[in-house]
Image (cartoon, rainbow, N blue to C red; front, side, top):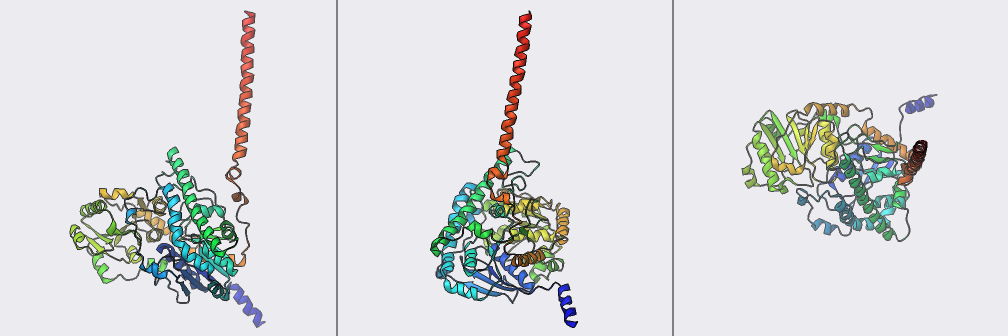
Length: 524
């Protein structure tokens, strides 16, 4: 009887035994590494045994300390050419600031697969060939692996050691991967760069959507194809096609939040966990700021934070952009500005008014949680976008490259932010905080969303472990071509039939009219 009572007690608690989970965290982009690291923390915090495997494709030097949970086992994989990576200069891409070609869809479609694919190739080949590594990972008897979709070798390592692998994308969405899991085309639901949103969108906006969507898909498909080719070369024998190996998973995890992102039709297979990186307790009860920032926030009633992330550096901003910002600073003498500026520059500091503070590093989450900070000027990286959305602060979004335009439009549509063209920085237009009410409303929505993102992530990972072969949630129609998917053949047939009926109707009316006219002439 006591045993039955004890069993009933555990069943009522819905106890789940901890699983052994392998998470691939390829070191090639800071924002990607940060998201995967934070995901590992969330999974470990829920009691699962997590091993974080980190192969170095680039020698990023700012990833230490991203993992907070002490129970996570970290396996850093240093390739044979790691010394070469260490000696290579960190890319900061200053050309992204004022180049009109950075987000050009055709150039991106051809250049991005070559540049990024080359950076991934050497380490990926070594991982694929490293049988000792495979044995080490196999011996740990993992229940499941989780891997970033942009680095495909992780899925083939999982295949080699015989464990299922759940795909994750650390950005909001990529149409190529969403389509594989049954999500219809985003056309009409999500505006592309330089397109207006419905209902204001006209023909040229829709044309731009189709044009950019096509080349974006082409670019990312070329990147994955390139990886598939050199992985197959490294293995030395035929391997499962990358689309087949990705879609073996019963779920696909994205960094989108349905209450922040654009509303799009989707399937149950695509799991949105955007927001798992947010700590609501810390946002509501922020940590005490360092003394230097306390003094800055006390200088004036309003303070504005300016930060353009970790890849694009403020000190490499073109001089005319800087001049525009200086005009803005001078036009708002009653506002304090904290500008993340990554270089000591005494001469530049002399050009700034007294209400501007340059800082190489800023405690961004803590500042955003402080009521004395009134607005945020940001590049629109997804991490910063999430942080400002959850903070309830109005934002001026100045996207520079990549997915930043999407993130800017995504936040601006809620009415608490402005999507601002980077080329307008030189004009020195004034900031505005009239969007504060809408920003606060979005914050309340995110705080009270009915499905907690962290719990959603854990539940779907456990679900995927329990049902690794589930495929029923991906609609079969997503596997057919464009014509069958959108019934274009049927529409074409009906149009043709309609045209034939109209033509026959025209012939009958014409013959009738001719007959009437002929009779009239004959009678006369």
